[in-house]
Length: 202
Image 1 (cartoon, rainbow, N blue to C red):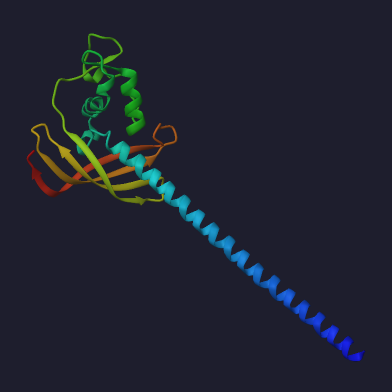
Image 2 (cartoon, rainbow, N blue to C red):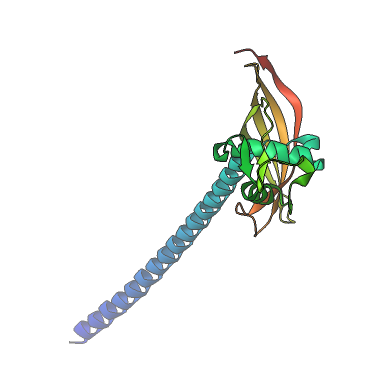
């Protein structure tokens, strides 16, 4: 009888000890699993945000025709901006509203009118100067967060010239956050830098 009682007590103690051991092990694995899932989600979110930002910057760059000193001359900036709006043109004219919106959203500049470009025959429209132009195709290399709401972007830009030749150059562009812009950012300047490869005749 005494042997049975002792055996029962030992069996009960073993069951209790094993139960605690199982609970502790399961608890650790669940916590570890939660931590791993959180880290993966966080990394994934950051990657998506960076990719979206890069895509936005690259899209803005590929619609930009204003470079170097163009930013400091209103006439040049406006006339070069017209090139991005040619699909909205009507008989060699572009609506002032389209140009105002584009210049503000891209560069943060506000123009009440474009009289500095000269008088036009159509009120409320800007005359599109007949001329050739280059095509710029950017590929982002690096994006640096300047921690002041701006980003410095280095890109390789392939320039397709009017004569059919190609050239690949470096380009440095600074984007400044602007909540009022349709893009969420403005281009403060975009400088085409040194040569990467020699011109290629097509």
